[in-house]
Image 1 (cartoon, rainbow over the protein chains, first blue to last red):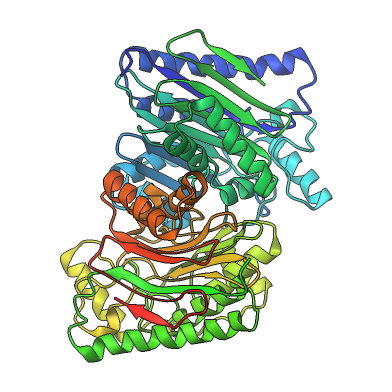
Image 2: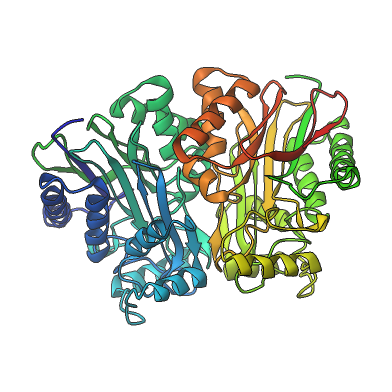
Length: 309
Length: 309
């Protein structure tokens, strides 16, 4: 076990075609760097990987740049329905919620589901009932909806198709994606978290890869921690994060070749559109994506904070 | 590609402590054999693996012996909430529904979700809206609830704990479990399907492994078709079906050693309670379970129908 720590976070994969100016790009980089710094504080004082990924996911949810928490995209009914999941690589405990609303931080509810050790996944009204039971504060109705997302839904309805949240938008506020984090702490423990508002104009009740253990999130101390983003349906069909963990487990690969092998499978079998961040059990950081860009940042074994589209 | 075909089906894993008499056991064996025969007819006339698993899952849902469709267990509110999923190994297309009700055959709705090629997973009211859009007939309210399941819920409330559907019951009608099927057709294509009522007294909105691609169901022509049953939370955390497929893909194992390796991981990492049926891309059949029993049956490469607890 190292005395060091690693952390990766992402803010979505896609074309990010609207990030045309340096100013636009700087806003994303600044947010990613600021949130990495918060994660670093936790890990540097020997905090757990689990605490680091929960905190980073929460901060990413809080930033309206990204499609999670405030600034989530809207479904076919013009409503926010969010999904989130968290997993502890120590014992493979996990918590996931899908189709939740009026919560500023779905990742907190996912953590509470995990802590209860009763179920792994709660959805819709049942998940909201559990949130109330846990006295999780509700966000006032409409509080999570931004003007940019309302405009984006109108455009999506015009083209009558599903769009990744950063497609077909013309204001930088609309562009960001699903968020996620993966961490390796000084005790050698791994954890991962993912949170999203889903895809613009999605059917009510649609669940993507984000809250699916193995697809949008996975962590096992024996292999790696991973968080995915992109077209959820593609990621679910390829069970992307577990595929990558199995390349580590069964082929003995480190993070970078495991990501390449997982992305190869993802492209070959489902023509997958998306990306993933991975921290392996030795603290190696790697990312891969088949989309034009993926905004992400990392700290590898206590090194400097880096970010990249 | 063989000119032969293989088929496996299961009716749940658990203690089946109430199958005390030969008469009780015969009812399960008879149902499994009858349904295998229906699957055989489809595969023998060169029907697809997909058609075979959908038909077998539907027939298992229709039999009140099993915890899926009619005879599903009841949640904390005394209601039926069912989950189902189907996957085509040819192209990794998949369809899943969770928290659906008033439908005799959730597997049909999962198939329709897959056919629409829009989303992979729909839940709750959104899934029911899609069912209505597809003109899927609704079952009259209460039609899926059996007297035995009502009594079982009362007992579960008494002990105040989650119970696999076949625990703590004293009438044979209560005992069966999640259902599933995996098939290999004469064209070498694989498919799998799983359907369930979940666990007795579960929270509203709880989703188990059944509709989770990679956990309760997985099929890829390059590896195998698999369907799981047991404590959904354990199976989700281990992503059991994808774990087994990856032992085939990355270690070159056939069905039997892949099942052993997957079950080993399942026990070692999450102390998993459940079982799985697997048909690999060469038509080999294998099963494994950590529970006392799993009622299942199989036809290996066109051979005789067999069934076993």
